[in-house]
Length: 94
Image 1 (cartoon, rainbow, N blue to C red):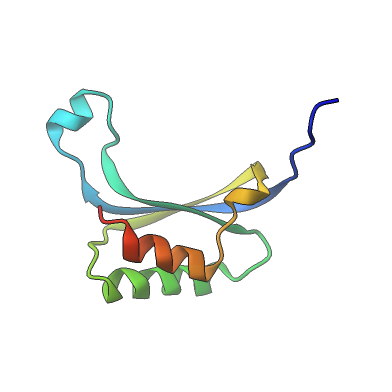
Image 2 (cartoon, helix red, strand yellow):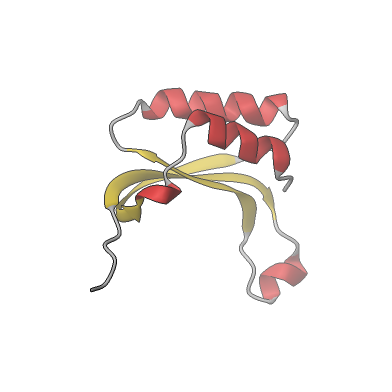
């Protein structure tokens, strides 16, 4: 019997922080560098967007834009809370 993976609908926040190098883009890298977070669909998106901007400023990370989409069937282990988001921004430079 295959293990069951619990999934849910979630909001995907793609935080775009800076443009990637032309060489990296030419080799298949993304155009924009930044962070990617999944949050529960039932929380305040505005609250999370403000929180992310404050964390970026607090840890002196650049910021260009946020792209928000809703995704279905996201594994629950990928859902982030505020402490996980702050820890990611604090530890992972662009």
